[in-house]
Amino acid sequence: MVKDEFGLITYLRSRLASMRRTDTVVGIGDDAAVLDMGLEKDYLLWATDSIVEGKHFNFNIEARALIGRKAVGTAMSDIAAMGGYPVHITVDIGLPPYVEMEDVNELLKGMEFLADLFSVDIVGGDTVASDRLYISVGCLGRVEKEWLTLRSGARKLDEIWVSGPLGGSIYGRHLKVSPRVPEARFLVQNFKPTAMIDISDGLVADLYHILEESQVVAEIVRDWIPLHKDARSFDEALYMGEDFELLFCLSEDDSRRLEAMGNKLEYRFYHIGKVLEAGSIGLYMRDGEAVYPLERRGFSHF
Ligand code: ADP
Ligand code: MG
Image 1 (cartoon, protein in one colour):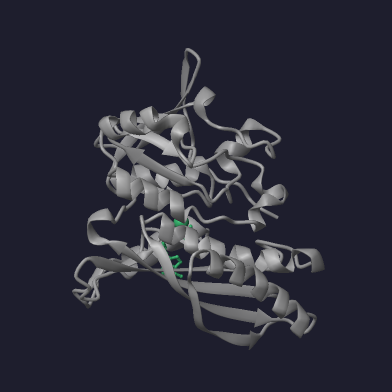
Image 2 (cartoon, rainbow, N blue to C red):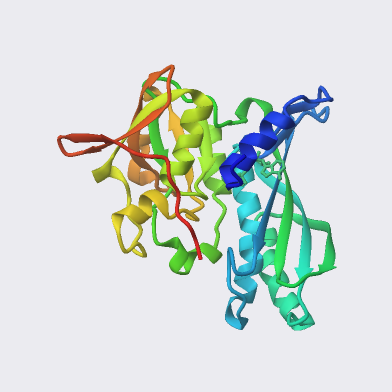
């Protein structure tokens, strides 16, 4: 077994595929687990995300609040990717000797910023001694059953969209995560997104998750992909990741409606491509007259 992240998740998913309970609606393989806990209209969503010093951030005094914000924001982003909204979080902190009480206070400020913004309660966690700082956040969310959006529903002729410009996040923006909860809620309330994911690994890698789960072939158009002003090359929009934007598919009808709403909207969405066919998995880039296949690859941070 190759111990890269995708390989490991594929292995865990097949190993842990058999579920023991009927209230598990979706287990491993989407942005959050989906649980039917007997609520009439809603499912519960459950996502966890960890960030580790040296891998996802470097510890420095100025960044402390943003590190807390990132830990919470990435978990909330996974809840948004299901069409839901966050309600409760738990926070596990691995504390190295050089992180003082005052630092913890600053980390908490960043967490509370997002908790306030989305009316979320921090209801528990765990604290352990560690040789480096890490924060692991568990986030519970809710979504109306009819609005649940998985990675697996993309269909032939669907249009592909993103919720914001991509690339260059690692140069600084990656800590300042703004989970696209309002955008996700706007989408599910007004449209029927067929598939959705948040971009953590990069546009290409995360689009491949949708394509794989939906068993479809898609094309993205180079000129339509919004490049963030922080990006130093176009490739960063495709592969750098940590954008935490929503990547989603809409039927042609919904897509036309969203297009028509255009500039009148509070949020800006960008149409970047199309699902071409169903039955196999593939991704192509259209660049002027040229069309070429895009390999599934990510970007190695730090
Ligand atoms: P995301 O980037 O959206 O946070 P990940 O790539 O981290 O998603 O995880 C993909 C899926 O694999 C999720 O359903 C997640 O819960 C599951 N997963 C990741 N690591 C583990 C693990 N160690 N044990 C069980 N499930 C895992
Ligand atoms: Mg995700």
